[in-house]
Image (cartoon, rainbow, N blue to C red):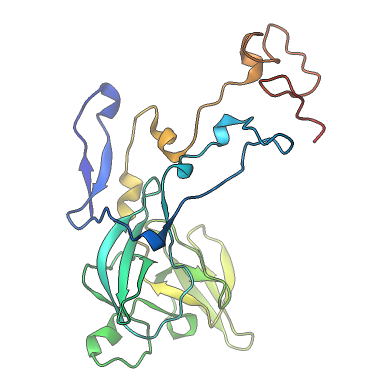
Length: 260
């Protein structure tokens, strides 16, 4: 996975870069994808869309089911790597011995056709024990780079999940069964000793070098530019015109949005 400069088609596309790889998989199993349904921007009375800026592109794009809550002992193999569209997250398609498939968050050290195992598991190969993929907090040495932390057992991976982020364990408190972790933001937070984490920083640390100078870059993320009703003409919106006296907010069709 590396950054590639796109061909220049206009002045705005001179600095365009994207992630590419010959191992990038464009196909997704059907049962590992879903379409997000959202009622954001719709009126609670009529159900019509009254705020078009809330209409996300995720309604047209299939999202991936990422396994953020797992406690597995049997080893598995990374078959392909998957780049999540519009968010630049790198996932690993993991194949288990039973034939099951799942998308796991990839680490900076994740390689294709490598084994994924947990620390402390009884495995036949010594190499799998030396390079664990995930572990429980109390088995990790302090000041080791970790990511995708779980606050309490069974809650799921919630912290330090962004591309290239990592956290560090600064102190163990065995009396209260907690560990003090320094998050990427600098905040120190207590985590349970029996929570799961991934050993190593998250993948795609090159994401901060990703440059996109297109004016419609955020349109691919489902964000649409918004023109205020006050800045329009009277024909286009009830708030339009020279005066800026608005008694109460209205929709573009003249219906009130205040008394809801």
